Length: 144
Image 1 (tube, rainbow, N blue to C red):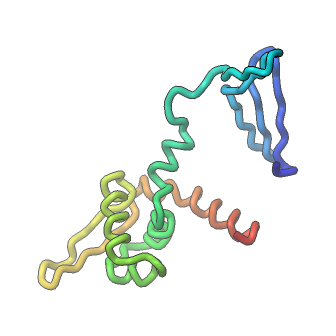
Image 2 (image 1 turned 90 degrees about the horizontal axis):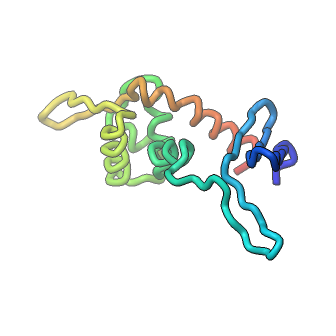
């Protein structure tokens, strides 16, 4: 476990807390071990938590990189495929369609012949850039 992560167990309220610096995470679900060794879950999550729901939007392969490259200005599709190395045009096209449907990016047709389109981050998409930047910094700090 991370040495900066501190765990507190409050038996009376059945709430576990993890603290990481100034961040406090209340974990309302917990596993209780009975005297006979059986385990039961107290306050189980019955639906996806907010972290899982957020990861469903931002967690697809290449989505973070695509959104990061759209942070400053609209980018034409072919330029975007060059910026996101390692992903095929088909993969980027699929992710952009998902991201457009989710409201993270906006597609603009620049010309019909030849077809040219550009993508840009929406306000909703830009609101996730802080999270992506924190992930980028965490990855670099931990040499991942």
